[in-house]
Amino acid sequence: MSKIEYSVDSEVAKKIHDLLQPTLVELIDIALTGKQLHWTIIGQRFKDVHEHLDEIIDSVRVHSDDIAEYITTVGQIPDGTAGTVAKGRPFEDVPIESIDVEDVLNYTAQMLKTASQNIRGRIDAADIDPVGQDHLIQTAATLDKHLWMISASR
Ligand SMILES: [Fe+2]
Image (cartoon, rainbow, N blue to C red):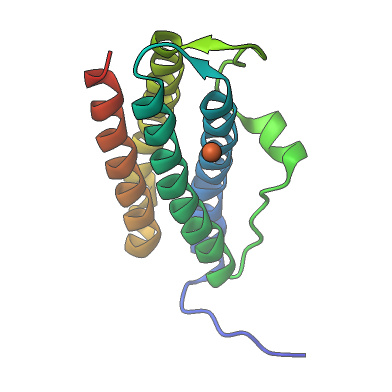
């Protein structure tokens, strides 16, 4: 069996896992809920918001993959399974029906804002590992950029 080498001390790795894992859950849920909204949106400016949701989903998936792989890189196990995401997601459920553009923008803005604020709350504690901390910072920057664009579309 391969003997994997880690540059991060195992105590630090456990702590950084605990900060990245809830971030992973939030990102996976933004991608899932974002697709639901992408499929059920109706109303004026449908196409712009429908397509912007896919841009958000694509960028969030890049961060979730980077974060999950970083958790593995430091010797911990990421959990992106549906059951864990369902238990850990901090967002409101969206209705399973057609949703007007304005409501889609509101749900999306709320998800992005909640996730960004939660991630910002983890950044200081992550200074034990600047590389893991950087994943949080870069992810918050992406979410904030989308929050700005989504809010400005309302
Ligand atoms: Fe699509």
